[in-house]
Length: 98
Image (cartoon, rainbow, N blue to C red; front, side):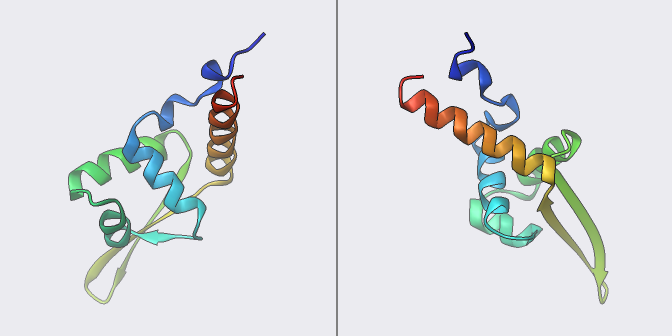
């Protein structure tokens, strides 16, 4: 029998990564600055955690220039949305005593 605790996704163990995915699940895409402000993070802290989620295939990063300013946006990938939903389902099951 597989217990709910074993089905939690380690990619979302960190509160920052959990926060990033929570924000991305509620919007199509979000800019670096908006995500940084929403989660009250430093540039480096956000960049390192988003990089880990990107490496896992859960987040897509788009970099472009708007005028002369760099603009980075993030989107949850289909795989990321599915993995996060499974993580939330496992948390729910765990809370219900599963």
